[in-house]
Image (cartoon, rainbow, N blue to C red; front, side, top):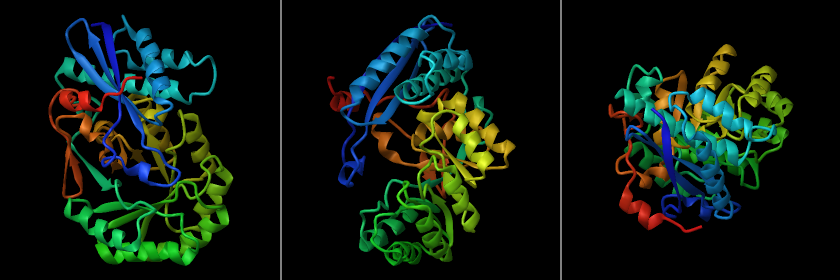
Amino acid sequence: MKVTGFETLVVELPKERVPLGEIPGQVTPWYVTLRLRTDEGIEGISYAAYVSRAVAPALKATLDGLCGQVIGRDPFQTDAIGRDLRMLNGGTAPAGLITRASSAIDVALWDIKGKALELPCWKLLGGNQNRVKTYGSGHLWRHYNLEELQKWGPTLVEEGFKAMKLRCGAESTAAKEVERMRVLREAVGEEVEIMIDINQGWAVHQATTIGRQLSEHRLYWLEDPTQHQDYAGMARIAAALDTPLCSGEYHYGLVPFRHMAEARSVDIMMVDLFRIGGFTEYVKATHLAEAFNLPVVTHLATELFAHVAAGTNTLMLEHVPWSFPLFEETPQVEDGMLILSNQPGLGLRFNEEALQVMAVDV
């Protein structure tokens, strides 16, 4: 089997599904969908994502260029193809648009492999069950007031989630930050796990001081409290807190995760599908983490990431439904678990009518 062609399309998702544009300092991410075609009539799909409108044309151009390098290749050679695409970066660090584009290609190749073998990707990747523990992460933003937290926390519980993520880091005092956690805990009860994401918003001393107060409300993990490349600072925070420290979503490639592990700057590694290099490199990241006795969690791309999460020692899957409008059907949550189908490959089909509506000419 050989890759014979491809098609990419820039799309802008409905703003009500991707609320980041409402948040100060944030922009609504744009997506570039991908179809990889083969000489046997099998098509693999994926997308590259999470860039601004200004960068979307460059991401499409990068994806088009890399796809051109995959023409004629055997889609089963995912590791070799990934290495070759990374080499096109001209020897620079494995970061930026090339990694995002090559990650999308890798996922599409896995979709082709699954369809060719008539196996779902989660099984092809080693999974023994089609369900993954997940947590609600598409709400509870830091610009929400206390009344909104009281509303959305129970709503997530009603939707089947037993864990959820709260964003903090924008309040003027430590007391106000802790009050957000207290209100949410009271709203959802003691049985629901709560994580807090700071998105690198605090200094080290703030993280240790406020983190100790937050832990009194049974915090499951504290995420990215300070700058992600400050390994020494993160290690100080991790050592000072009983609450597990989670980080990694901002890192590109495998090497930073080794540095994190060696510095003991995290208790839980978070890996982003489009920054690591797709399914192939994510599997390597889980093996690296296992060598350091560290659990791994995912970042975004729920309907894609679920497959590799089910096939590896992944602790939990982040559930963010932003990309769901791209597809006809997506996995559902039942009793805190995301349920995957037994359909071959990713088990996903693009919603053609929706894509035509969301398509943007760049």
